[in-house]
Every structure is written in C-alpha cells, then in structure tokens.
Length: 522
Image (cartoon, rainbow, N blue to C red; front, side, top):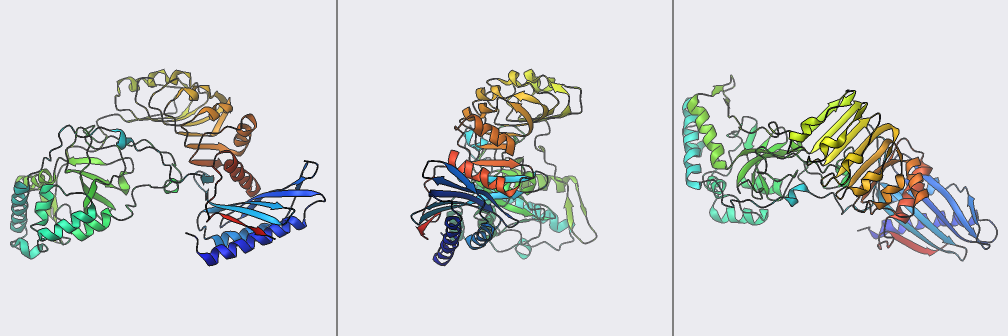
C-alpha cells in the first residue's frame, strides 16, 4: 500500500503538472488530457489535447518532463515504469491516474513490456493432468532406514573407519513432535520413507550423502526453501522478460509421471546442490507417477523437472548397489565419488521439440510419429508445409520462414503460443480458429488481416511493432483482454506514452484503486 507521505508528495507533483497544462491552454478550453510515461532512463509525453467549447480538439506541446521525472522518483516504481494520465478541467478540478507495470527490455529483444493484469498468468499445463492412477507411495520407511544404515556402513569401510559411527557424522535425529511442526509449516506431508530418515538424522550435516556437491537439508532448511521465493519458478510476467509466454514444459521421462510444471507446492526440495538445483519429493504426481517419487527441479530445469526414482527408498538402494558394485572412487581430498546412474535423463527418448533450420523446404514428417511433440521451431527456411503438424499435440510454434501459410493449422486444438518471423505478408485469418491460442508475437513479421487479432478472445500476450499496434487500432476498437503487451523496437518515449494510454483505454477496466487515483483543485 502506498504510504501517506509519498502519496501526498506525488499528488503535489501532479498538481503542479496540471497547473502547467492549464497555463498553456488556448482560449475557450473546457478540458485537457495528457498521457505520460517515465522510467529510470527517460520520460515520454504523448502531447496535451484540449477540448474547446466548439467541440474541437487542439493539441499543444507542454514540457512536463521535469514533473514526470519527479513523479517516477517519488512513486517508488523502481525497475517498473510509471504511466500517468492527467485530466484537467477549466474549472480548476483535476484528476490523475497513475499505474505501474511498464518495463523497458533491452537485448536480445528490445522494446517495452506493459503488464496490464499481473494476476492473470498463462495456464499451467500441469494443472490439466490427471491424478495418479496408483495413489499409494512406493517407498518403504523400514527399508529406507535399513538402506541408510547399510550405506553409511559401506562408506565407513571405504573411508578407513572414519565414519563407523553414523551418529558421529550425522546430526541428531528429529523428535516426532518437531517433525510434525515442520510438516505443519510445509502444509504438505512428507512421504513416510523420508520422514523415517529424519528420525535417524536431521539431514546429513553437509557430508554429501546424495552427491559430492549436494547436501541433504535439515528440516529447517527444507521448510525455508519450500516456503521461500522458489527463485527457479517464474511467478510474474517480468520473471521471464525474453520469453514472456512459455506454456511449453517438457514431459518427464517416463511420460506422465511428473506434472508438466516448472514448480508446484506439492514438490518439497530436500537435497540442495551447489548448482542451485534440488532433489525434491513429489507429493502431487501425474497419472503415471507415485506420491513420494523423487524429481530434479531448479533453475537448470526451466523446461520442466526430470524424474529420478519412484521413492527416496529406491534412490538410497541405488547408492548401496553402486557401492556394492564398486562404482565409486575416492579423491585425493578424501571425498567419495559414487557413480549412481539415473535411468531417465529427461525427455531424451521422446521427441518433444522439433527444430529445423536452413532448409529450402522444411521437412516436418517426424511430427507424424511424435505423440509427445510440444514445440516446433523453424528458422531460416524458405517455406514449410505445416500439414504434418495437424495431429501432433504442438503447443508452441516459432516460425522464421520466407513465406508462411497457416491454413493447414486451422482448428488446431492444442496450439497456445505462436511467433512468426517473415518478410512476406502472412494471412492471420487462421488464428481465429485456434481455440487455445494465448500468446502471439508478430513483431518480426509482415502481416495482413491484422484485425483478426480483435477476435482472439483468449489471447493473454501480444507483441507488435508500434506501426502494427496503430494499424490494429485503426481497424477496430475491440481488443482481446490482454494480461501483458509488448511494444517491439527502439521506440521514442512519446510513442511509448501514447501506446500505454491506448492500452489503458482499450483493454483495462478503468476503475482505479485509492492508491492509483489523485484528484483535487489547482
């Protein structure tokens, strides 16, 4: 909530700007409107428009840059830009609406993003998957404890008896009452096998039982990570500025075991790696998974998690078996390296992304035998027949072709995000027939039939060049209820101000909150 001193200071700055507008007004004016934009680099003003008594409109250049800079500084907009709309009556009354949400983005995609509805994010594909067919955990708490003790014993033998007493190398067990408190904080129950392990030791004290550069966290660490910001999971449009619309998430291998999400509240990290990634127990699996299965998540898994084992018990068994086979070595520093194979390495055995580049005619026939194909990328090809994609469950399509014909994709049931790059005009009419289309980037495309965008009712994100936005608005007053918009290119700030003002008028329900509206008399 805006604090009172800042709100008062901002209102005074806006009042001074309105006084400037009134002083520059022509004879017979009734009302004036102005739209401005400011961020940490510059300011822009779309001009001041005066309505005269004869119902004429008269534009006047009024230098409000100083006020815009001051308003931005006082507003606390930080990395976000500040948009301002001023309305001044000849009677002396004024109203100002301020809003945050405009961000300047630079390389590799220069332009401005305007987040219109920050609470409206792209749908999560994992939410659409079915619950597990077998809801019983695969882990066994008694076996898990036995395996842990066997594992520690084998480690002790290999390291010359240094670790012969498990209680000497591991933290003390966690009392059951304390574990219940932790689970209450998590708001998710731990699987029984991991719970039993915490009854032996509260983590590994950074011994690295689950990998030389990884540590089994104590329960305080588990609760802190689980309830923290979970930095690997984008929760805002600006968390992924150069890929703002990414509904595509890989399916794990085996398919259908892990939900197609980047993060879920039912995923509880319990091992942290120095690379910023985690082993987590999955208490919210997909139809082919089991509660308590182990997955890898983190910043290195932005395309989705990987499946590791059906339980912590099974993971421990792999470590014990590896030591029994002799799949290990001891480093000069005394560290134990254990070669623990993971049978599933992500999406390697199932084609989920098809990339074709620098072909005269892009060959898409592989798509006909790819039941898990989710993303197609075509770059620097002359043309492509998209017919082969009709039956594939493709969700994202990124096409860079000399010529593009979208007609074969008419009615495609799963296509969610489309990016087009082409020097020759592409007919957008087919987009009307895509029931799931939620993201569209035409900023590097030549198009005709741009008014078709107005009929894309489910569209959440749209990226266009300034002249494309102008063309769209010239054809229609109707607009999809966008959650975020992108203005591509190196655009003058006066045009940015005009663009934000147009979006507010055409898309946003203009009923500002008490923190956004300022009014009074000059």
